[in-house]
Length: 168
Image (cartoon, rainbow, N blue to C red; front, side):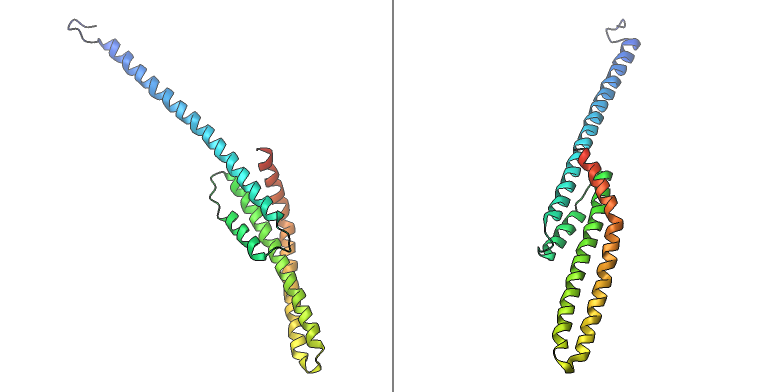
């Protein structure tokens, strides 16, 4: 204390230092909490990605293509902050889209071949038969390309999904 009754320069410095320590401790606590929140958010995002991919895979090929496409699009638009969850999501969305395209193209090829068989029954429908066969060949080529893409994309999706699962 000074002679006038107020705090002295040393007391003022100590009070300032203590206030700074309190602010730093508060900031460290908030950062620690935020780091914990970030970890919890990353785990929650990983869980959502795993669940959504599993749900898409649970839909059988016989299920409506539109429902599967919608589920894939919903997963693709999922806002994610975690780099790992976002990377796994993107890899699996690419894989699931390729698989869906392969299935749809194969179905189109089957339908085109059935149309070619029907047209072949009618002798004057030679042009229709040739057009149906061309459609089938185009659809089969598209299906093969999509299967090839899926084969390339599969390992990344599987490994990244496994990494997410291991962190849950």
